[in-house]
Length: 279
Image (spheres, rainbow, N blue to C red):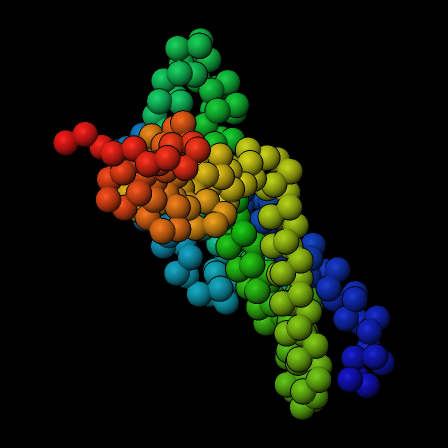
């Protein structure tokens, strides 16, 4: 705890750097994944290859990718650009499938209705398809954000400083509180970004919140149904029959004019006189 207090300024500085190195790939990955996911959704013949190729990118070890990309494109290994480029590739690998699945979830009747209303392809995509696919895309974006924030720590292995510095430096100097401080900082950042994404989703897609509330409220009316044909139980245990007759606690049924029927089939009038039932 004393180490954390003494080095709080260093932790804050590394946290800001880590956020910058993580948020840029998340944003770039989303921008690149939307058109790629649309192509995979629109053209079924290329969907399989696109999904498979982007999925294979995620299987490449992060350290190997950080070394191979500078050799292929000619930029420095020890640079934030190298880390951002690698993290962007991993983000695209997750988000392309999320975009394609989100567009698949849009109801076909809604698409036909928008076409019948005269929406052009671009307008329909921007105002109908993409918003309705938003919840699925947001779920993929949340996974991408947490994964990117965690993977960014490997940048310290190529000399790019961020919160990963607390891991390696603490391990070399055998300062366990330093390592724990780095772990806690990464977890807190991931949780905060996830919460912000959820709040942004509720603000940008308010219809999803209304649908959730309607499902939670259940059917309207608040009437209780009995086990046989929708009979409702009264406040004193009296059950209302299908024709509005109420049954008393002793098995006597009250008719629509206030007459109560006895247990032997005799009906009692309003003044206490018993009327026999004709055979």
